[in-house]
Length: 237
Image (cartoon, rainbow, N blue to C red):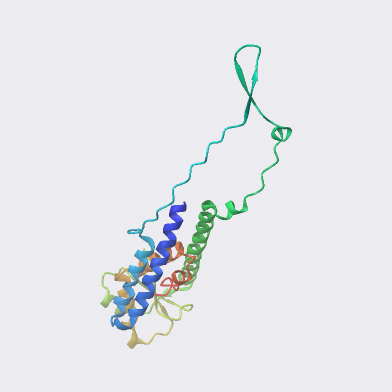
């Protein structure tokens, strides 16, 4: 567990350095798609331990101590070892709690990290499921004009088109059964641009990218720069 935690901290530091470098060169990258997917390098650095070695110090061997013994001459020629002892040895006092050992215990820090990662990822999952349930419960099929535009752009019919009063901006929802959700009252002349944009997200499986970012940042929840990155707005794509 100690080796795992040390590797995790080192990955978090290296990923943060790479993220800072990416933000420095971001103004020179003209393509928004290229800048978006360059964050995959940061995610890979945060979760892949390639090239990361953590040498652990060898555990020192405890010295072997011999109990003080006293030999007593018996009636014969043999001697018998007799171990010295006191009344306190028969009823030893309880050892005081080693708080330093507790604080530095790798088991304690592993449990704290695991609980934080579960809570962080659970926040994403709970928020997404709650939002998706709200949208799907109140959504209605889009109008005929919007359906015709979608059928022209994606004749395969793999993406559903919905309208929802709780949505204020177009978005893609659902990994297995993707649906484009439109707010009410979208202008007809904007439908083609909006649907083309959301279909691009669906073809590139950007929701999977978002969930990968959520999983990786949950592993590094203790690192604020990583925890507030690309997965901050999972439902909105």
